[in-house]
Image 1 (cartoon, rainbow, N blue to C red):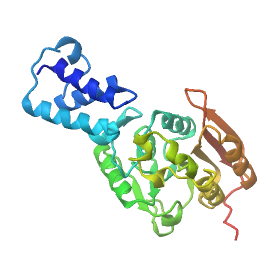
Image 2: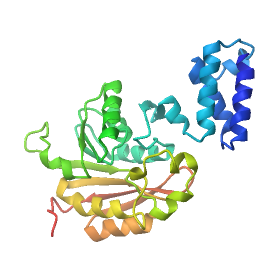
Image 3: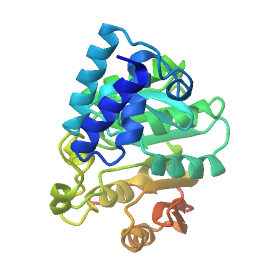
Length: 293
């Protein structure tokens, strides 16, 4: 079978399975299996593929036809120009989240201390560390298996970051900073679960059935994690520190209200490339304030 014939087989299978981007996925899987690039289909479509390549490609197409995410088949996803390992224990990094990273980069400086809550694959924190100098990065997540992936990503990128298992700020209590007596952060960033519980069943199968629900479910109104993150944030922020949160398209008013009520200032909402509200950011100007109650 030729390279093009194998691609056409994959395209047909994915089209019949109602995969939204059947052409793209059929090509990307072929390139992944055969270790080729996008020009091969145009220039070398008559190349004869090996039996093992055909076997592996058919198996990959069969998985994708079952709506298993492309990234779970290849085990990787590009984000901020970097390659990250992903699996079914981590949320797949998405282009919309690059807006969050880009906004943090607008304000961050070298040597800052960064806390990434719900870090997952570590893509947000590691991207920030990759494009800065001498920053200390700490990521927390409730999933030990997700953190294993984050550590693998850090090693692959040659970056030094601490990944702590536990809910949000909880594991910080036992962590010893590399900087003596420095327990406050310049930046807190998070892409927390923010989908309403009842909405999860309406998501596309790739998300609903294969991505970790704990990384999606934000409670009955989608705001559970924002409430806790925002309420407890000041106890971990130095004066003038900033918080950056990815939000759902319809959550700007609610998240802005939570930030305002907690005493944050300079609240701003940033849209993504599709024109949807995507990032809420704010400044803490009151100095460290311990959690009350």
